[in-house]
Image 1 (cartoon, rainbow, N blue to C red):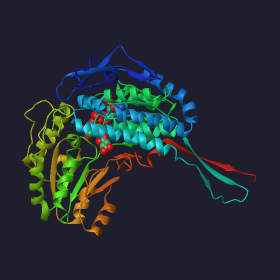
Image 2: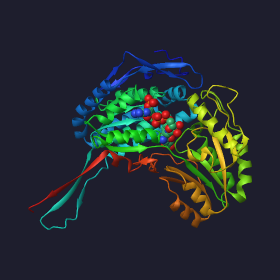
Image 3: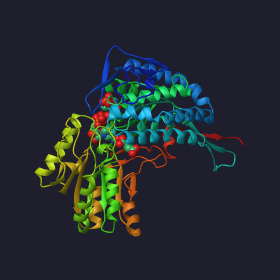
Image 4: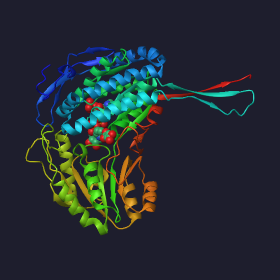
Length: 487
Ligand SMILES: NC(=O)C1=CN([C@@H]2O[C@H](COP(=O)(O)OP(=O)(O)OC[C@H]3O[C@@H](n4cnc5c(N)ncnc54)[C@H](OP(=O)(O)O)[C@@H]3O)[C@@H](O)[C@H]2O)C=CC1
Ligand SMILES: O=C(O)CCCC(=O)O
């Protein structure tokens, strides 16, 4: 494997063009190129696997389940801790692989690697705290116990925007709980996933406990959702595909977790600290060049502070440096592909046609390809496409509202309910609005909500289940009651 396409990579062995199935690294007759979105250059290729290889991975996971579940939680935690240590030790190389295939700036990629590692460390510990229960029996001759047991073989499908963290946020709790797992990473970012697989193997994870398959989404997804050995499907990605997978999984009544699309409101009330609100808006809106499901998608600003906020925000947006993620000082990398750029252009064109004004940016960046200018739109109204759909790009649309009730109603006027942000200083308002926002994740006076301790997940069409946090392991456990009679 040539490593020059990942600048500065020290351990070339991390860059794999094979998949990890049942403890072996396998190829296929067909392969899929992996392209650097900043340069268009092919980095490598990965095998185009299908249903047969996925079935093999599932069968290996099934075979491994018996012994993995019977290990003590402490023994599993020791292996997971070794994996965590290796991820941290190799953070620089992993980040370089990620920047090459995903485009995000190197510093942001390193941040994601540590974020990803934190889920392995956290769940290694949490696994030791999965306790059963003894319930108060309503009958004097009976005792009622509760066991918590691993659900079994799990299958995960993950997106390209967080090539490491979306995997570890699923694998960490699954393996800590005693489940085994087959992962299908996004076709655009499989190399980070495979590198994590290399480190899992080095950490001593038994064969079959974790497999990573790349290839045809429909064939792999079809096998994962149809195979009776799989007891749980966990997915992060678009709502459209999530619904499809959920319908497919219904055939064998699998447990499902869905982290789907968002349309996050970001409210700025008249009592907000505007400088802090601007900093939060930049952090939330422009993280990963606007390509996260928790990015602020609609910035709703109270009338009396609208102009001041817009001016302050424009000054900060203008400072964002666009470029190849390997260059120093770059804060905004490329978008993932041409289709993503077209979606951003479509949202801007639609908004402008309906009366919005481009305060800053608004077009492809002079660097060409998939680079886009950080954009600020004002006078945006609910009639515009950007109000309904996730833009998934560096566009900050500013809406105006008059009263708290109107702001909250606008914020909730979406079928999505993942993240919601607001800036306010009045304590009563902070409580009121936190309670009224229809979202799984609410951020008050901050633009960043992601760490291993916060429960992550949505309501409405943003999905089901919670990842990370002390609750995240529950999705990988089945509760069994045991009633003892004749006492
Ligand atoms: N909630 C979130 O975190 C994310 C939301 N999105 C939203 O979705 C939009 C589209 O992004 P996109 O990458 O296409 O998201 P998708 O939902 O299409 O992709 C996410 C994952 O699902 C896989 N997949 C796609 N189709 C199927 C299928 N029929 N069966 C099984 N697996 C499937 C993909 O595989 P493959 O890569 O092989 O196609 C990938 O691994 C974005 O613009 C954004 O709005 C996108 C990414 C993350
Ligand atoms: O965009 C996503 O796919 C969700 C991950 C973002 C985060 O964990 O903060």
